[in-house]
Structures are given as structure tokens and as C-alpha cells.
Amino acid sequence: MATVVNINNNNSTPAAPFLPYLPIAAPAPAAPAPAAPPTLKYIPVVGPKSCTVVCPNCNQQVRTRVTHQATTRSHLIALLLCFTFLWPCAACVYCTPCARNAEHYCPACKVLVATYER
Ligand SMILES: [Zn+2]
View 1 (cartoon, helix red, strand yellow):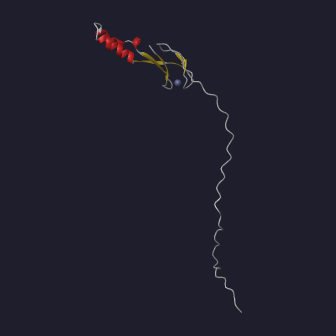
View 2 (cartoon, rainbow, N blue to C red):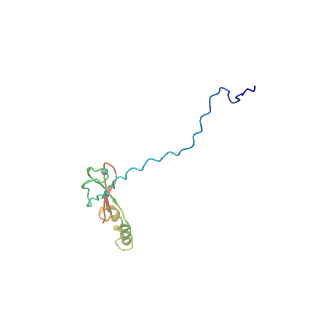
């Protein structure tokens, strides 16, 4: 009488059954968020001197800090004055704020709020 010997019976843990790769289903796309209305950037109208504005960056009511910056026009005026008999006045272009742009900065967040152009 022949005996059947199970050669695979080695008392080890059975191998994990083969699991076919199942791609993870992508979550259903959420409903598109309603489009936010476009925000209009508020640019305050400023003059040559410091003024009170609502900062468009931090939304605080602040008194602006003004710095005067020379522009290309300022340099051209100074250059023209150098070639005339008014050459001593050329330095005045850079000394007086009336020939330069006034840049208004927010003292709270240090952002350029507006520029008053000459
Ligand atoms: Zn600010």
C-alpha cells in the first residue's frame, strides 16, 4: 500500500496569499469651491505730505511715513541746470522734496502704500 507523503507540510507559516495590486481609488473630486469674487486692491490717494490712510496690506488706519525719491525727471532737471548758469541750483533738486516723488509707507507693516508723483 502506497502512502502519500505531503512534502509541503513543513509546519511553517503559510505564505501570505497573493494579493493583486489594486490601485487606490482616487477620492472623488470635491465639488469646486465657489469662485471668490475678485478682490480689488484699494490704493489710497495721497498727497506730498504724510496723511492718514487705511493700509491695504494690514487694513489698519495709519499715518504714513513719507520718503522722497529722486526720479529720472529729477536727474534730468539737475542735468539741465548743470549746463546753464543755474548750476548751483542743481543740488537743490536733491535737497528739496518738491522735485522728488513722495513714497508713502505703512509704519506698521512697512509696505509701500502709495506714491505721490511730481
Ligand atoms: Zn500696513
